[in-house]
Image (cartoon, rainbow, N blue to C red; front, side, top):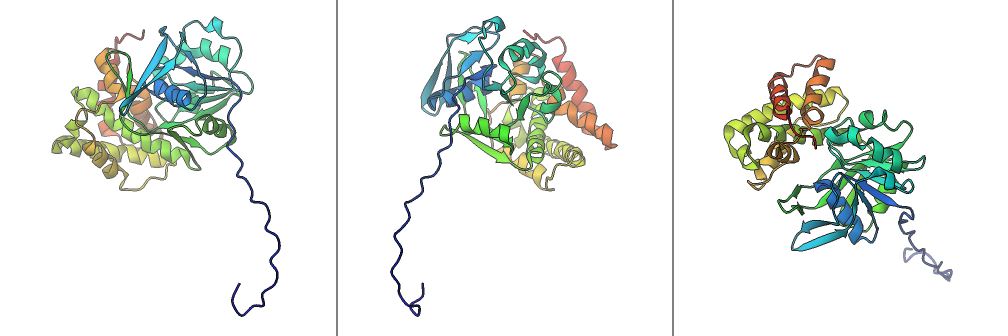
Length: 320
């Protein structure tokens, strides 16, 4: 109050309100696909004191994440038989590649019930379109994964930066956010998730050039590759905007600058798959730009070259 106002006896202060803590899920958490992304999320959950049931193609007794100067060991086992699932989980993290989606149907049938939330940790902007036919009516949460995690030759996973997920701002996403609350994996909710997802798609799409050269991020420091990458990013941007993404003109230049600032030896998951002879996520990361460009009548001359080459690079790969 001002000094000109008369002073009156102040009422007794009300008891300080205690902020309502973010609730922790009381049900089970499951993770399908303990690769680089899955291991990172499993380690964050484990360190936050949330047990996670692990499911995948390869039996393992533990997962190991290298983060900074320390290792996080997530106890297993990694179950490989869907018939061993006792009951549906409250929350399922689906961390398989888009090329492995069809093979996960038995896991999803066993783990997903009417109240289960499924958080999809996959590349691309078509996560809902891909999952809804498999799980009609399920509570599916698409995500954008913002962290560089690489599987090492010994089977451990190296996390080369901070871990962050972006989810749409809706009630189902709150379940995921609660599960990771207090962990070092940040979860942010976006009211314009589609634009965020398309921005990441642009980043994933241009990383496809690394497959065609067999080189890591240092290649973007070449002026000729930088010019090609910038033209490709602008092509992707035109398609993204036609799909409703609100992305500025300077996004391609920002993404190129980011690639040029990366450590020269930084790889990407699609390059790792190429080096290992596995099927490539070329359609989810690159083919989608060409397909949707045709839908909107937008010329995609660079995609018209890159996509067939990526598809050919994936032909004959060992899905197992």
